Image (tube, rainbow, N blue to C red):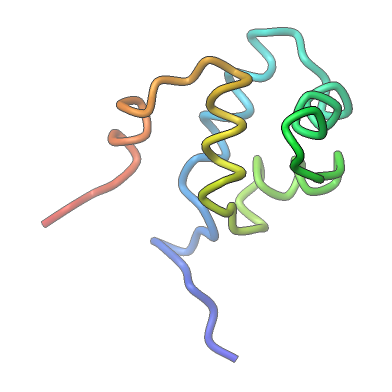
Length: 83
């Protein structure tokens, strides 16, 4: 089964998410609770996998995480290399 990878990563936003989560002093568990309030079910193990590029992130998950962590979508552009 072929995996969708971008430069050997399953996502390119994991580092950014981890940085912002830690700057807000928010545990993985508390982030999951805030996501649940938005109707999105993720577990701390999912957050770990996203932050360590072991799991792809769905667009709606990314939007919700950016909203909770106050990440500007323009920050995501720095992770995408276009030729």
